[in-house]
Length: 274
Image (cartoon, rainbow, N blue to C red; front, top):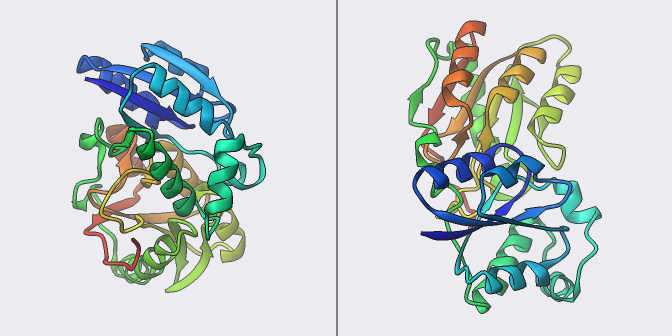
């Protein structure tokens, strides 16, 4: 099959491309400058580089390459989305049409524009279903009573936060929210929480947006998060089963086991997100 792929940062795009190559798919990549890494060219049949504001060029590339199905993979830093864009006329028209300027509204608007051009956004995890977190305790150690209480409290907050399109993670200690993620990302949020917690152990709770689809903004965690947890005295992590990508899953769980951390995937809570 022939796919288009919009690549941001992180390992998500590379893993999707590796899987596509193994399965014999032909993938045309539009890579975002200052986000995607140069190594992406090793896995794609062709790579086209654009800056984040070039919506017209993105559409032109996919139409020229006769691509009708596109996946969005990897992250684009939220700060870049709202402070570094130099929009072309197509993107400027889209931005001025938005009632809200959050990520969901922007990507939803992009989806509509692409559909008008005959290009469909596909599930961003289509090639990576095995990496979605299975339900249950993923580590040898399950959360203890105190961790479980913090996680239970944190899941409600994280789901509300994600539903409001603010962030996907919270740091909890002693059933209090020490920090909530916004544009800075999970690792920076945990480091901020560690400063505020004054040595008390933290629990990391990540939630998905609660939408029916996984077209974009899928929660991702991996080895880097585990290392940040150790740095910040975060003893347990909870994620949404079936809606969170675990990068380098085996190594991630092995590292967590070696450090005595607990990781558990729960069925997603219901939310009001659309």
